[in-house]
Image (cartoon, rainbow, N blue to C red; front, side, top):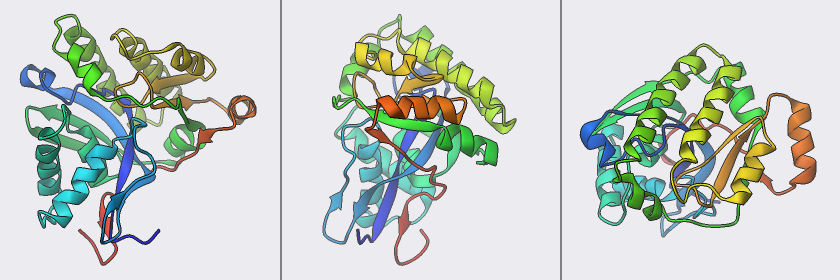
Length: 264
């Protein structure tokens, strides 16, 4: 497809939801995510995307493009902040979707109120193998709005869960920097354990999919959309593929938002 501006979507690996208020009003949210080779695309006339409603951060990528095409911004930090402001006008959200779309790659993020701190994590051969070559996305076919999650995000019993998810993300950063993929898979399992403690996130279908992998979690707010599944070797992955033909392969996308005519 011809494009003038394209913004990558993302997979949240750990710490999702700790990037949003009310949690970030009192705590520093920590999160690991990576951009993938699925895009919101502006062709000069309209913005389009074939991956809507899958929990991959499409609305964030949409507003990143708007910050460039309508607000005329070129500095990535300003693009991110403006895209976040735009999103807040229409949606209850955190900043991670716009962050991944703006900067690309694999990153560890910290969020407090409307501020952010980024640590880029190198995509080594071992990390790429574990997070891309031995991983798939599976679309449940059920679209869910993040609004249902944020109904619960302000409840007192959810705050300790978000603290746990934030702590896991910080450990995830360290294990990725050490190329320790067995520990990364364990931390993904830990992430799903705590995600699934929040009402409306898990479904029987999602739980069955995750049980078939070596590690897995929902993308975005859960309750539908895509599930990320990780496998420890090719045999395990191929066994799963034989039973589930409709998987979504992807590649980690190390570029952020870009213009066809040149660098942002």
